[in-house]
Image (cartoon, rainbow, N blue to C red; front, side, top):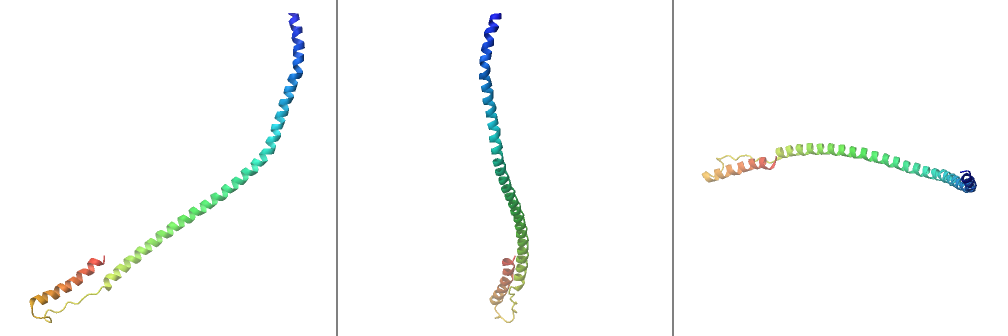
Length: 135
């Protein structure tokens, strides 16, 4: 057993420099990664800030647009109500401004029954058309 231990020592001693080189290589890679991260992070950070500012600006514009839309909707409802009221008032005035034909006296027409009946129908038609065409 003593012979095997002596054979292993020189082998371990020979592997030590190789392992040390691998460790040094890994440490330099880690150092490079840290440098790259430090250089990249400020770029990403400034880009993130720029995008975040744009997002905030667009959010404000969206809020303003939503407020403007609500104002326009409210104004639209008010104008509809005013229009309805004006139409109702106009329709009422139209009813009262319609021509009312006076009923002719039955004695002034020819003494024939047909002509008196015709005058009465004419007068009644004038009265009923007022209510049919003016709601």
